[in-house]
Length: 366
Image (cartoon, rainbow, N blue to C red; front, side, top):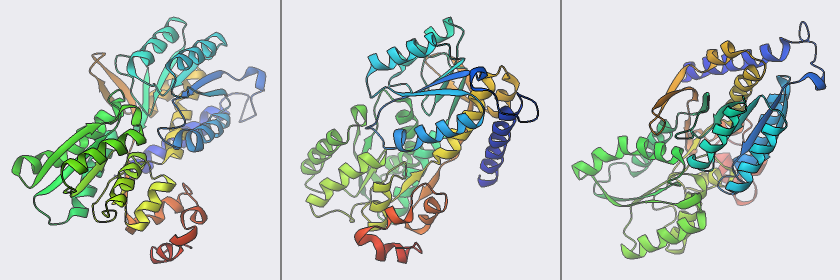
């Protein structure tokens, strides 16, 4: 897995360097006025910290390096703003529009308008079901769910009869569906055999952490605190679950999964309140997306096809979408150093305050 991922990223960076130097003769910088324009719309600032703290600056840097003029917007969770931003970018003459749809219905409508205007579209991180994007750049999201479930199994050890709660992501987000699909590949056989018991599986609208906390509080109360493990679909939901567990004196005693390897999530992993997270190197995703988008913007579909070696099925659209999928990594206390080594978080931030001794135990500078 690791070798395939490295090979994919090497191809992505090679293409990124190629598309940035293929105009202007031997790598001469393309004059700003001649750079093709591309538009990017990120979804919000609340469901995950990654969109503005990681994706925005990393995409801006990677796209600039390829010699395109990128206009990156944030829909702020507002479908109307998402549509208005798309209309404005199309009107301003972008060659490619890359989006993280808020929901498939509004995303598909934006892609339809872009296609009618002759603008190529790319789905970033989330597949727009029923949409018309030419490519999809993301992580192996079924694999993410498999890692979450396996992480929970590992943390539960030999415990039989474990009572499991699943706190899932937004039902309008296809990624949440894929995470759950991966989880079920690992957990359903255990439910069917009676090794584990599924207490409840609950999707959370808009990935709303406050709502997740309230839902989990109700589940915990209804089961008289008898819950043995929680699959939380990302670190934000995990934090809400952990807060409730802490109020019941159960934090650190009930394994909780996560995803995104956020700073807060990693600190919870170090404390032992969170069993694991899933590290998805956004730098790699942004670099791969930049190479593909830049190639499209410069009319080099062949180079884009070189990157999109995978395929994902859009059942709503009855089509296969060329895809570039990057493998995720499970993060526990044992390998948390990897996220620091990759500069995804700083040791200073991770190890601040009372976590310094735990960081030293994990071979991190505290």
